[in-house]
Length: 414
Image (cartoon, rainbow, N blue to C red):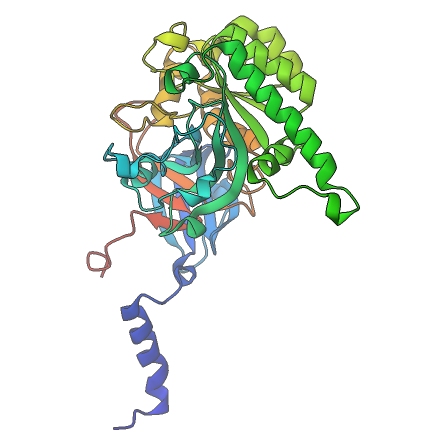
């Protein structure tokens, strides 16, 4: 039997739809309406609208100034924000089951392993990725955990995709470095703070020498390729950052000394005693990915406080939030809740929201794509049913690159 030509387009459409091959872009035109829209580009917009087209933000503004085109699917809620950013996590390397097979965040065979790539271990289908996304996290800075002098590399991903290639935003963002007593708990060497810093400094010197030889005009005099030193050279030359986990004031000071000595870009991770060194951090221009507000205090974090973010932020130091890493269950915190506690302990609420969005994007170098609701940026948008910092509020819709999560049930929507 031969079908008439005028029936073929409809038949092809049905076949592609059944096979799941139609691009989501055909359905990517959306309008998001909120009683309050926090664009993070200025003052909140009351009764605002965000138009989404082909995975990007098309227009943002008051409802009376924006005409929603025909065919746009409309979503509405109480509060609309940019997609939230978890500025430091190990989700995707550390998994939900807390078993050896899904715990790839920290290799204990050697205290210095800058060659370890987060992209090689990340599991985009890990249940914790979906858990964070359901709580409004659309972007994560994830990778190797604190606990080694250099534990490996970090990267930035969206909380979406079937594979790491689907999720990737930046494949190599920083080297994860730890200063403090936690390292001695994991390795025989270093056994003291000074030994750990000496080992790190020696690697930096080796990398400087390696970089000089690597650029030799005579190919025969160039060194053999060293993946670890390549990564450290990238850090020394500013292509990636040093993400140094340090909590005690003396360890933070050591990180600042190393930064002055070698000139690498520095992001302080943790900073439980950062409030002791506000002047020094501000002078150095070093941002802080603050410890989870509700961290269990003990050891290096014994002086962590609920109002650390408030005190450091009010000193003019960029502060952002993280879920972090702790070796017990539950296997991840939610950065939104950590920020909410800081807001409850006096941090300006809009500043706390900025810390989860545009401030994190700026520190991580992805503010050209995400972190705020602005024309041309990725359509990462969250709708809340109330104040995001109220514990009873929940995201009702999460959009990543314009795609709704969880995906609507096609049967229920017929």
